Length: 427
Image (cartoon, rainbow, N blue to C red; front, side):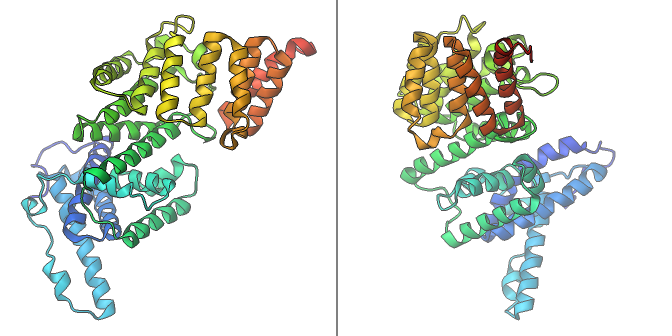
């Protein structure tokens, strides 16, 4: 088989190669797992094949069948490892010999895509949330261990251990590489969507570190959700999640200043928002909402659409947003949903009404120590005219956040409020 592009073809650039490999990685891994089992060993073999592709494709050109090339190379790596292991243990050699390398693309089932089954496997209920995220980014997203570690601000060795434990847990669970039945599939899809949602949120607003965002994570979440939407175009919550991501990410360019400082929604230059992304997200959510009872992601997308379609904060339809948050609180109750509803209540009924709701939330252990509770209280106290109280709450919120841009913003708000009273004029 001629594995390389025709003579004279222009070799792909490094970025083009990386994008192609990330698209093919889950398909190749799915083909190997379906044929050989042993998820962990197959995943290692695919990573080795990807490394070889990165080293050779830019110079030698694309293979005629990039997917077939990767499957063949990864299959050989896997079989070499099996043979070596059998030799060390002095076991019979015929098992490895019977699993011949895939010399012909048709043997690999190139017309079959097991990527969805792979995504469901990476989000297996036996895995804790962080492991589901790491394994999804590695096996389905095609990101390297080093890239994932950098995005989550942990050492590469720590992330490697997390991924290794996840593979071991998959093997110990006895999970089969196949699509679950209808009942289980619905439950597992909720986990898949939640994992993608968490990846996007971490990329859009990093929980820690020196930068507000991690675009590689939010971008990967959008890519994977687009791909999932192509596989499940009729699922309303998949559509809702993709619309939510697009409508939220459309504001990215306006969220930070040139120095990386945080710019809140009410101060953003809306001319910098991505109008194409907003139009796509609005079209999606407008099409799916009338189809039946909405799910949580559809409602969140609708809220984002109301924000994005407003020309300014003053023209935002806050009563509609409040109604949507009330619906969301029924569908997916949680402290952050209640916190956001308190803001909407304040925008509709005044800051005192919002502060009353915050006092009810202070007893929620999940929220009591979170910096967002204190930041929201500060904002509503500032709206009400209680500047000393707002300053104290801003400083408390700054003390509790692990994000440097958020801490600088909150500290700056506190300093501006303190300045006129103290006569210091601090900014």
